[in-house]
Length: 313
Image (cartoon, rainbow, N blue to C red; front, top):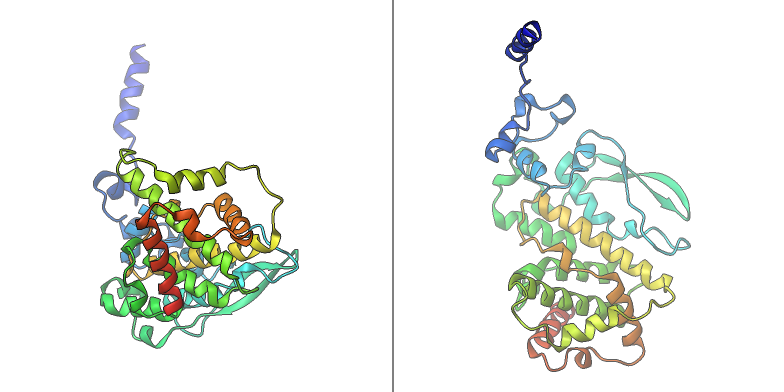
């Protein structure tokens, strides 16, 4: 026993934990030590280390900086139509341009029909971003970073008038989706998405009040739609909403890379597939948005503000 204890004591004295790049983050909430990063992460600018570690920057930007292929996710959609990822490709091209510079190419894996394909996607930079450098992107003026985002999605700052700050980005992206989606979304599809945003905002408000506010008739009405028996899926509707999800994902990533010129929305409240599919069925059957929102003037006002912002743009 004495020999064992002596050996254990010597082992404790000689054992040393190697310093790790995440030690500062876990101990003090600071960015990882750049000098201790693994070699494959040396491509990252210092300012990105903390948000990447916190999960507020998309991790796949590391693959892009390493010039590795990027695999686009596949959702439920009509495989006889082009991949929904094509809709949001112009947003990703600006994302690539900010990371690599204009004219470089990124290899994307996507689908054509049901087959996996690869293609080269060229990085682009709008005129507002020509002087931006990745190493100092976090120091660029807010007005410049905002302009890059607005030009990319094709809206002006006036679109945010009358909207809650947390819904500015979703409405701007919805406008982009309405112009670029194929087949072109009809009015019930747009209405269903905006009603879904109203539902999410009501849920968010109730959650922030810890459930102390009454659920209200609008929430009850929409929860009733969610709980209805599932319909036979409409593949065309699923395909168009899949494109919206791609646009929202890539819009969120671009906003993050630009250091949040727009307030980041709480994504959990933006989209509920079961609800929006039921809403499309209801709206195509003659139900009106006002009838779904009746007896709640604030919900009607929010819905109309979003609809007017999109149409006025």
